[in-house]
Length: 101
Image (cartoon, rainbow, N blue to C red; front, top):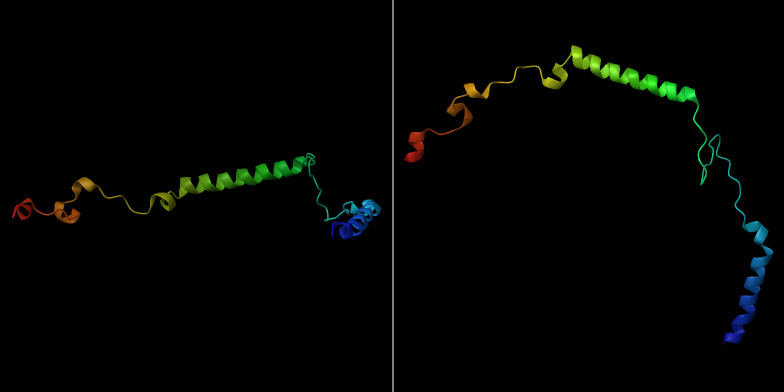
């Protein structure tokens, strides 16, 4: 039974040796993207770093300016009530006389 399989296996192995040149990967062009597999990526232009810094500077200016001029967005519009001025009834604490009974 094994002898019947030998010719099939030999044909399969002989076919692999003929197609060695066809097993190479094809080149894929994906527009302007640079493939950087196992190599360092190309350096980014300085103008992109400058544009990023300008965008970040504008963002932080916007945040701090609105925190300075309109703090109610974060802190709320109304004054926080003083809890020391609240009565027991407002806090939902029962009277001492009612608890003993």
